[in-house]
Image: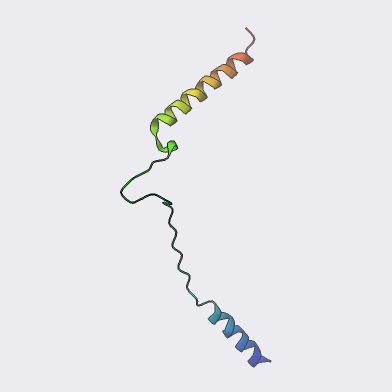
Length: 67
């Protein structure tokens, strides 16, 4: 029984030796000479988003006040 158990455990450890090589290419369809930027990395987008958020916040807070 001990011989079978040690043989089984050694087979399990040797089964884990395979190395996996994963190569991911995240630049689908773009060549290396052209650079693409996403819209949310532009600073003007964030400036407009913050301005709209502040305007909405002011409008909501002002509508809640009963003057």
